[in-house]
Amino acid sequence: MTENHDLSDAYEVIVIGGGAAGLSAALVLGRARRRTLVVDAGEPRNAPAAHLQGFLSRDGMAPAEFLAVGRAEIARYGVHLVRDRVVDARRDGDFLVTLDGGRALRARQLVVATGLKDELPSVPGVAERFGRDVLHCPYCHGWEVRDQAFGVLAASALSVHQALMVTQWSKDVTFFLHRVDEAELSDLDLRRLAAAGVAVVPGEVAGLVVDDDRLTGVRLADGSVHAREALFVAPRPVPRTGLLERLGAGLCETPFGSYPVVDERGLTSVPGLWAAGNASGFAEQVVNAASRGYRAGAAINGELLMADLDEGVAAAGATGAAGV
Image (cartoon, rainbow, N blue to C red):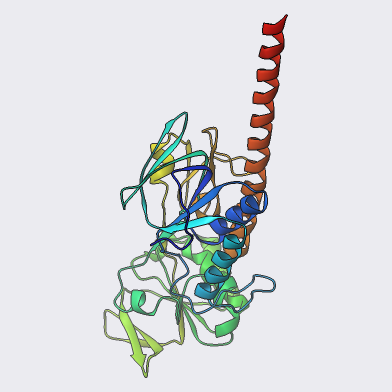
């Protein structure tokens, strides 16, 4: 599906990913009069959420509305957008990009803003209610469920941090160890949980209790039920970095997956290859992703400008030398 028409096969910049980071980069580039294409597979990470929060002037906006506004804005500046998936990318002077629909495209610079995928714990009911009353980020959702009875499902010993953090929004917090052995928690962890008033419950979680389409409890494998109104989980982030790896970008291993090594502008170890949003790091919320996209877009415009000027200088020098 093509949203903006008059497409060709050659662009100055191709942006892969039409989320906050990709659209923000495209907006800057379009306003800088750069011939730009956005390729969007239509898989935004925050699709399960009803609203996005913490974005000044956009607080409470539906994610789908936010993206629709962004697409309309880039169209005003001549940026093309195609609904498709990039299946291959390689370097041959320029970047050569192949779409699932069969088109082959060329660009001088490439922005990868493909984000990441949340891999949820395999507990019945969690995936179905994710983004509603099964949540992952208190900064994104804490205000909306404030003062309710919280549960936190441990994915690892690192989940202690999440259990402590959510006490800022509720003083009724239960930490379900699930498959984590209490022995894996440090003495400091246990003392902090106690100081925060967090109840620690051992035992595997078997599922959720839902009444009238609302979470009402967490059921353990032994059949006991703990009344809860919101459950925080820590999904395993799976960065979509396949294209970056294929193009030779250096990656850095973190506790939240492997991400490209980038400079402060988003440039990877491969000249002309940029990463923005959750493709460049785990903690890029929508507002941060938009900022990273803006920064990358401005830097790319400067790179292209200087490259063209240097080419002109070299050509002028060669012409002058030939005329001597």
